[in-house]
Image 1: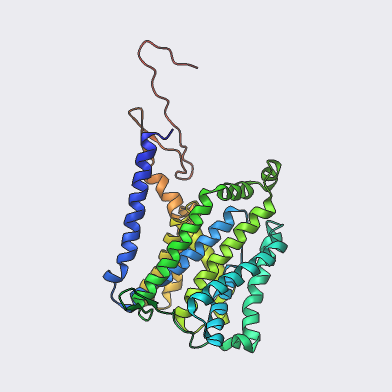
Image 2: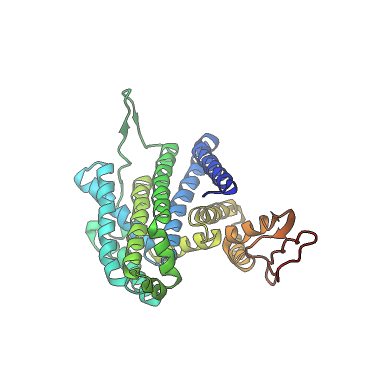
Length: 358
């Protein structure tokens, strides 16, 4: 039976979600500058890519192929629209299907392993994808694909249409893709698959002893994460209009991992959003410092890793709510505290005249 406190927490959680979504929807109304909206678009794209890293990490996999599938989604949709004059929406579905098939074939080979047995093959795949795009003229070589068509307009019942030719409409398009991605991820996390991934990530042998197939669980997570990354690639291709192989290598994947880790991998949705916003916006704010910007950003990352080892959210939230009410007493809450500090709950005092149990 759900307690009243759980119902209140759930109520406030949905209130927070609604407020957060309202803020995101209102961004174009507040930021009229196209460059500011461009940064907002990058934050959303980077956030979703970082969410895929957390997804795979929960299943015990550190993937270096995220940017590769991002590129597969971008190139597949761009080629379909450029060479066949196909509608963007049909090309998007086919591009996601292609990414899912590639992820299934690759995952069937590498998801049988964990640790270095998975990391190294995923790194090789992440290196091969941009090399293939740059080597063959079919993919435009190292020049890339130029003049990718924007998303096909959506007709409205009244006779008008939504055209994705401005920064604000592009922002709403990527926000819609992000919302769909988050809903899909949350649905999987809430189902038995989420519990299976956590079990496999904790100990594959222990999970196997209770009837869980680690290979199947890893493959499901790998295909889902790769497809979500490809969706962001589909958006980015039509958004940039020009794409080249240079942006889809392993270094992009490492950057995505940094987004997730700094935000806090214990928060699979909000953590990547915080990390992506921080490392996308701060370098732009420091651009006026010239050559000092990489140094300042690097020092900031080092300080966060040193003093917030669980990420920004994973380290700060337990401290912010570190004093909770228990039986009328204020006691430290369970959670990571400062280094060297112990978190210890205070036992409630026994009623007068009653001997406390040992």
